[in-house]
Length: 149
Image (cartoon, rainbow, N blue to C red; front, side, top):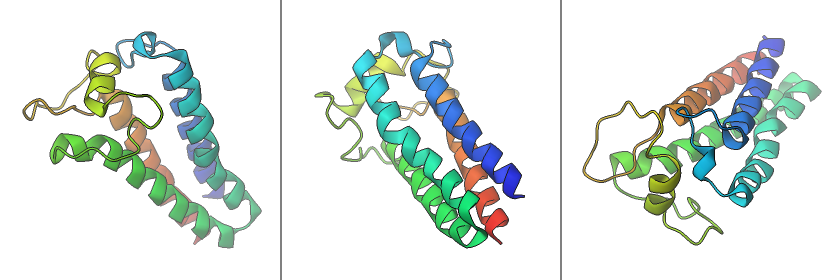
């Protein structure tokens, strides 16, 4: 189970990095993202996403810490994407350092990607790329806790 959890963690990090840096339109739309935004997102998030792999590799006891960290990472992603869609509230860190609002960033970068969710007014909707990432991260959290147990 530990090997599965480690594989899922590293797969999530790789998926995140590829979909942030490589144009695989219409799944993503990195061509309309600024290169600085892309690299900042990877530089900030990839190490945090990879940390649970290092913790789980140390020992099963640290695996519980890794699982808790995975839950925090999933919660952050869900709050970032689903809170604006479902409730109409944007988290403060959504566009930190970009000088634009979440709605502006979403309209420029994500609105023309694959989106399968129905509209709720003019709220930004999670795209398929991020729905896959969130499902993968949730599977990572479950597998990490299972590996620790």
